[in-house]
Amino acid sequence: MIRGILLFFVVLVAYSALKILFRSAIRGYHEDDRRRRAVQGEEMVQDPECRTYVVKSRAVTRRINGKLCSFCSEACAQQYEVKRRT
Ligand SMILES: [Zn+2]
Image (tube, rainbow, N blue to C red):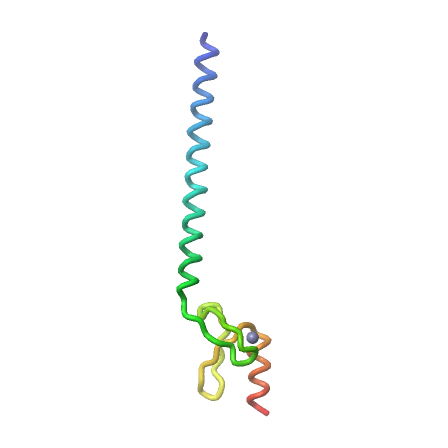
């Protein structure tokens, strides 16, 4: 009888621990989703080198001839800079 009660408590504790773990996992997922949506709402800029659109906060920015340019990657920025110089 005592063993039965003990087992019941162990199960109860395990269950509540799992529930807390599960809840925090769901919260983490929702926060991730919100972050993703914020990125989608961000301003897009065009890479003058390869003409692809990139999210402004993730773009590689360079000041070329006094003008701020945004690129998809470091490689594109370098390529564009070389072109401007020659
Ligand atoms: Zn590019």
